[in-house]
Image (cartoon, rainbow, N blue to C red):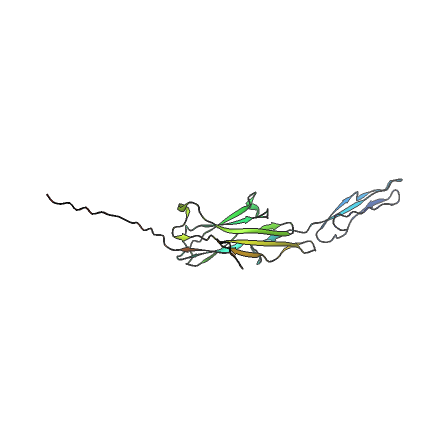
Length: 226
């Protein structure tokens, strides 16, 4: 039976007992049998309805898999990492795209990146966890670096990356009861709205100088003697 179709089985002899089963429905189908077991009464027709509904198994995007699209790396250039260096990244869903469970009712989820001992230029990986897709479709996400609003929360001398990445994920039904994910499309988008294709997500912060220049002005006064 195809999705949503029903069948009726009638006409068994009076006094007969019956049990209706369906053996090995195709992958992705669930079955519901109404009046599947009973006894036929004289003068009546026993109706049995078998309904099959197709629902493919969900696809879970797992950071352990090679095709996982929601990961990236942070690179700090100009000095080694310090133990108190902290950078925050956000995965934001558009149009209700699914997020990891810990996002709750929020439309985004954030991850903090730190490195206790990393050399200048060291790449530090991050990811946003498992994302479960239950329906075919095209899903769009933005991955951004969260720039502190208050200057006191910024790392002195470090420039933050204002570009972001747009990740488009396409989920399809393989026709045999399983959803699958096509290779993700990643666009690197800059402040002037220019975009380039990207193979991965990389944010680079550059350390320039954490010293401040203090301008001191002085005035010399000459006084004549008595």
